Image 1 (cartoon, chains in turn cyan, yellow):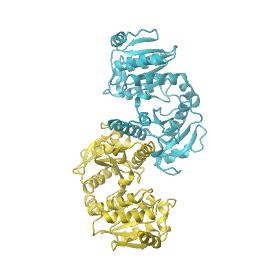
Image 2 (image 1 turned 180 degrees about the vertical axis):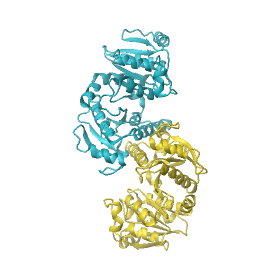
Image 3 (image 1 turned 135 degrees about the vertical axis):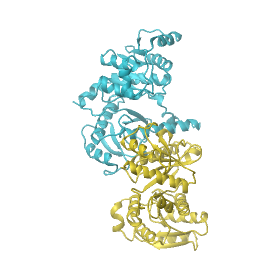
Image 4 (image 1 turned 90 degrees about the vertical axis):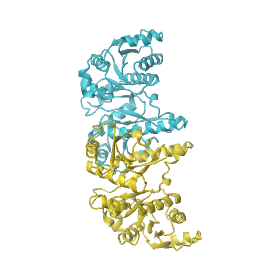
Length: 312
Length: 312
């Protein structure tokens, strides 16, 4: 299995990315190879400094960089020699089995849509985030930002995508799917969630358990929490912000530590034709390592194949 | 000044409400009288048990109760002798200067709209919640649930209403108004926030400081955070849920303690013709006391008059 990694993306590139790759190789099975995509001289210099030699690492030169300031839709055609453009090219040619980046999220989403395409039947691919549950388990929430405006049928598909992800990658049996809403009873909510509830109720595609209120995001009432990308992004950033504040205040707690993004490494883009993984822009080496472990879990689980079958 | 209090509303009624009234009277200026609205025999029995005698308390008998299960729009006409119906009647007749309840929020909102009416020019009255800021100050967020679906001009009005509230009741000079959004730059967001941003930008009605992301809800980048009621309710409940978890985990911290709802007592319904205050359904005596102090602050600040002038 060959996992591609963008070495030029993220705030601490290229160093954190190369170091993360080295850490990942120590943890991943022997048959996993990493393909580092970025400025070859820089990559080789860091590998040399670390005296790291392995036939499980190869380097593909991509001298250009898509920065956080580049326009997501224009960046890939404008910068064909950037690490993100080269990564998608390798993925499209099946020279790598997955492509992971901590770079410009917008460009990664656009690349996924135009270079590898949405799976037929999927209206809108989406991204997820982990919700650390107080009982020690993890739930996921989706979408967390790639689709700010959603229609009810799109939320229905998020429920399917999230359910398949929870089953395949998180090994949760018959995942409970909740709809993030303002009130527990049917009929509560805005026009979007009221209609989505009707679609989801009695679905045979997933195990719908009803509405989930904001206060139950971390109590484990659902394994998969579905919402539009606007709401999900606010939820995610609010949780991140609260975690930062507890760190600033010097509050130490094992549960709160689970809100540290670096534990999770990122999210696959659910609903596209190949495995694409997005990491946080502020990723350090640990986060990059975990992103590559997630890339491996996603590839091993045959998630994309399972989604394709479900949406046939 | 006569402040009306629903004694039958909330999970711990009538006891917590009567005890909260007694606590409030100890704290409020001498010229403030409380009008307790509920089952007279029960109220008098609790006052007697506490050996509380004061000419600053009067009782209005309202034998019926609107419960949390009653339908918000039908409850008031169906139960004219309920404490909420009687309270609105007294308010409409100007026999009390404000009416506060920890009962059925939906019925309180409906009563506000049909018994005291929206201020002319206000499209949708709304409710607020306090955001405890890590620097010790408080911001507010609105709407937090009375309007699940909003149009951009409604968000614009929330900004005006919140700004007047922050100025008048919270004594914040030239309050900074932020739009809750997913991204800091203009152009980010869903269709609603993209359009609302354009309306708010350069407004002379309030001091617009741009988009606020979820991670900055508690960092004090804005004094007034504006959003639709769906998003605001999720934010509020998520914060409440996280606070509950920290309590369960035994985490002690002065900042986190400021998320305890009982510190704030409730919210006025902004944009209606008289002062109506809504408290949390789980209010204990301290929360009821603080709700009555808020009712006093709102009445003293002439908030409603100021809103009327602004919307002329």
